[in-house]
Amino acid sequence: MKIAWAEVRQVELPLVFPFETSFGRQDTHSCLLIRLGTDGLEGWGEVPVETAPLYNEETTGTAWHILERFILPLLLGREIAHPQDFPPLVRHLRRHHMAKAGVEAALWDLYSQQREIPLAKALGGTRQAIEAGVSLGIEPSVDALLARVTDFLRRGYLRIKIKIKPGWDVQVVREVRRAFGAIRLQVDANSAFTLEQADVFRAMDEYDLLLIEQPLGEDDIVDHAALQAQLRTPICLDESIVSPDDARKAIQLGSCRVINIKAARLSGLSAAVATHDLCQQRGIPVWCGGLLETGVGRAANLALASLPNFRLPGDVSASDRYYHEDLIDPPVTLNRDGTITVPASPGLGFRVALDRVEKHTVRKATFKS
Image 1 (cartoon, rainbow, N blue to C red):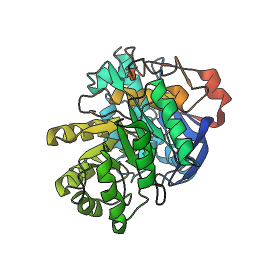
Image 2 (cartoon, rainbow, N blue to C red):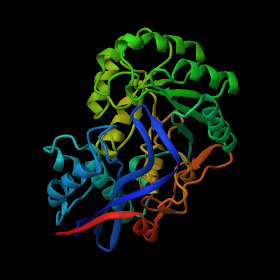
Image 3 (spheres, rainbow, N blue to C red):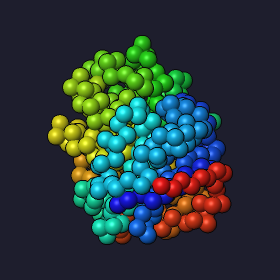
Image 4 (tube, rainbow, N blue to C red):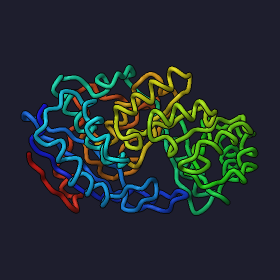
């Protein structure tokens, strides 16, 4: 496929309700959408960056710059036989994983459309539906959090993840367990703690958590190994794993027993599949994380999560978890059994609603070969 043109848009969507982590509070999701054109087809990808460098070093501004000045000039007018040809093309560009991932996702969409197969099949997926979990932010009070948990359990979600930070940790887990009993429950610290605070996580051992996600530094695997050795509860790494090789090293050191796979963090779907395969070979379960994606990114996550070693419910929730109005038709919906159906149509499996994309666009540019 020869890429004839590319479009980059910055879109901003208001969230159904604010989402707070140890990084801060969000009322709006801002990201970039990529659209690539070739042979009468269009492929879509999402760059789920935010306006501030809080999750990683990328922002909407830096990603736009890298796309415009470095990535798209390498791609436009070039024949790409397979999406896996793209990572070697941009390997010399250091980091900027999310910018790369958005472009590669659009290539995978094009590739699977050309072959008239679902993206899930192109990636090697085997499931027709995935178990859905939900990620809940830090709330103004424990009672407010319990009300959120009640709401999402009633909707049918099969796993609850709560964000934690110093001062909002063990006592919150205790209250959730007291209120809801043996639900599938896990916590996510987003790197808010240090090894000197290991007692917090030792105390969590008695609450039968599925896992503790990224308790320590975002670039650490050494202290995580020391912490994991003290705990029965599995540690799951997220921010620390930005390549398949990082996963190999973390597993070898004993830094974690579970890995969260986000294609955007790993620089694309190809690296995400490679990380999945490595973990499967090493007996390490994985699950699909989320970055408040619109339906464009959510569709790609659904396809990825259909691979066989995604053995735990992920953060791929229904569209109405975050947005009153998503950017795809039909929206992603939750089945009565707490699963989400993996699309069976070619490509992403959803129609991108251009009128809604236009409505929420705050900046756009088109580039041609």
